[in-house]
Length: 441
Image 1: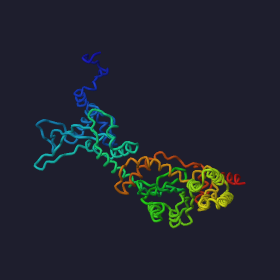
Image 2: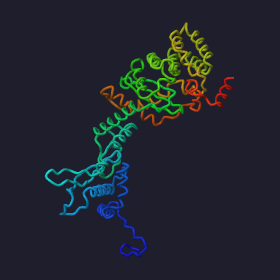
Image 3: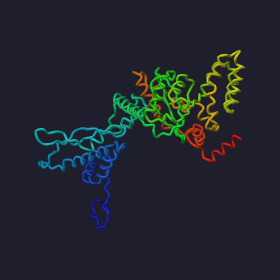
Image 4: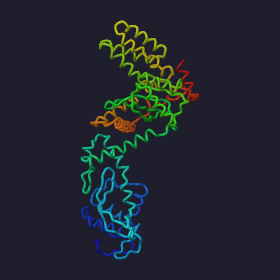
């Protein structure tokens, strides 16, 4: 049946095929079938759904028709020569709408009020499509995956009618999005997070020292807690970070395990803020590195193996073994011996808490927070000039937030009940207590 054949009663009307390049046909069809577009109009207005991938002439015609429908809801149908409402149609003008990381040029209708003090009347759909938070967030995500502001336009689809975004605009949008993300991070309530462990470490970005913290809750999930400008060697900076956590709902009356590097200032800050409720585990990776760096190559591998073996022993036996190793090193390598003995007991905190081997591996080093540092460096190195410390902090936060998307649960998370019990934060199930007693025997 061709399209000129009359349709019989009860049969479907023949389909009309419109070529994708027939823009006039598109506009005519949309104008005739405006009611069919109303559900999509409601989706855009109610749920902020955007038509991210429609970048052709058909997309422009579709969006423009949506604007026409929205304008008709405000001003009524267009009736040439008839002005029965307080709002009248006033031609059209060029406009742009935001679709994901792109802007699309469109022709939008104009509405104005009548009278000597006439004013422009906004079109609801156009106002909604022009809102740009998603654009800023999308630009930030693209930049963090490796696209610089100079290369941003080259990765956008080269489609008809697509308007590229200038480098300055991209940079501005990134600043807005990253500032907002940093603010949300530093204001996020910690009251609902039942944290057991805090990993604290520092990173240097363009000469600016930044101290960051990641927490692990009782289920093993990791959370980026916050960061502050300043070195881990500055006790006041560390105290400000910890006090900030308390102000955001962190329960300072509970006992926590802090995993840190060898910073004495950070250790002092934990003691001042949490007292005996702050159990400290010194990072074994830092300790071994500090000792090995002070030894000749022929001896370094042997001492490294001894230290690894000692960390697997019960607390007293492990400490005794390393104290003996320090005696052997004292005469010819006093610096290495002193480094080995410094803070030795706190490298065995997880052993003293009688945790499982898997959980000990997850809690004995600051790798949990140092691994995201790699992502932070990949993000921050693309900036050629940092204007101030706040800019470095903003980019560092962006890198950590990007790394947080790939956080996995803590190694040995199934055994976290052991840490919870050891910290006096809970009671192990009867079956778990029996298993633990049997293993100890």
